[in-house]
Length: 305
Image (cartoon, rainbow, N blue to C red; front, side, top):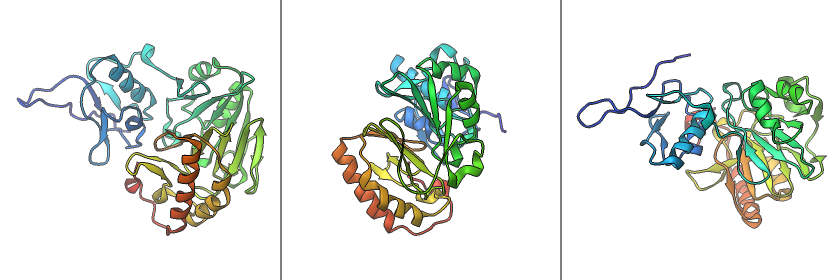
């Protein structure tokens, strides 16, 4: 892996400025831009620091981006990251937290912790593996289940499940990525896996893609669909649909009308909270748009985050 740093920003007189920067290991995964969109932008197919933070709130956003970055590419020229500034798990509301510490072995995907009324917790997809991180996550409550949305995000599932003494879930279509799973979802019918939590098989992005809906409020969509900052709408990642865009269209036609949620919480792409009625209408429109899509070659550069 290339450990070189990108040149630090230079002022008008050519002097090198100190501060935050993104090094050459950046894979353009979009994680940092989700967390600090006004400070980090895409330039020539990679993330760059647009400007230095102004005040504590913006510094906290850059630290959040730095501790989530899967390649640890967000750096400061004068100091190392301070563990005391690590905000994870980062609450999104009273019941869901973002794990941060995205893993290069899960394509830099986001993962989440879902708190249940009983005080227990479910993990949806996984961050990078670390016993220290696992201890931080289980401080929120006993983790009973690790829910995998699909094969790309399965790398650390067994380690976290074993550490927590939790059940590991995956769909049979992606079972070869985690053959040691404890519970295997099958077919295309929705399955209740806990009170208020339902799994919806959604083949398309991969053969075994699944999304999880909790309490008619939270939709953990994996890589099946996401909120796009570019279009201001819910989108499918048609250019990185590994299995079949036509299967994804059929899955949405079969499933979208059953989904009720306010929070869209994807593996890649932005998170978004909207009223129930609006998410239902946007899902209806997404289903119609996806039906018109044709298979395309895989092209990471074409996805409209």
